[in-house]
Length: 363
Image (tube, rainbow, N blue to C red; front, side, top):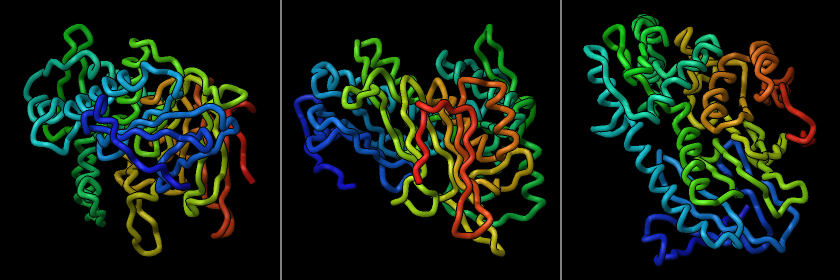
């Protein structure tokens, strides 16, 4: 899909973001290189505007209706917040709240900001519910496998075993009364790569809600989406996003129709390397220390973008049977797993917890 030409609105963007007016048809636009892809909507009389900015090593974009005149100014405040959250959560700079936690929490309890503490509590709950398939302490494993440097490599098993000794949610102690975090052994490190974008979208949505904006769609990096309110370009009021074939980006597998939901996809297409015929991706099973295999992509619908983001990674690790059990126990969660088929050119698609009006299989 062609992306509209960028133009600067310096009177309110101040050179930090780009704005697009989607004139031909209202579209839900996501980077075509990602697992998620655009779907055209059927109301060309309704114009959408899209404002975007780089953050967290990806593009954050807000899509809203042109008629909402207050949206551009609100969007800039929300994008500023996302940049602040990146400064808080990153492990790729010299200083951040998370870097400071990793430096000192093994020797003393560290008090953290209230929003970050809520994120830590959510991560702890999801670690427990997924039986450790989602784990923010898996940072040492990503280091050993080279994926933090985007240079995947096969480590020695002894190095994997050593990293595993530092991994596990039980090694992190939270005090909700004091809002502190402490590591219970040396070498533990946390990393919010698998939940940070979704968390930023949720916080940005809170900001927009406080400023009276109700109908919009957030994208983050093409793999995380948050829909709020109604899409006036759709008869059903839904924001529709398409899921791409993991090996054929131009081919859609399904369309998701979002209403006040988060959506996220995890897959191994962006970072992986081949070893003895195996495709080893950057999504590592924190229980074994090895890259997860058997799933090509995992897509999750959840009430919040943070939950969707984290569970997409967990479901990629867990596989179909465990995901089915999870969705049975959590009726607000839906998922689609794309797995290898019996023949190399085919795939198998498994859906869990989805209602008929929340998605449409394609093909």
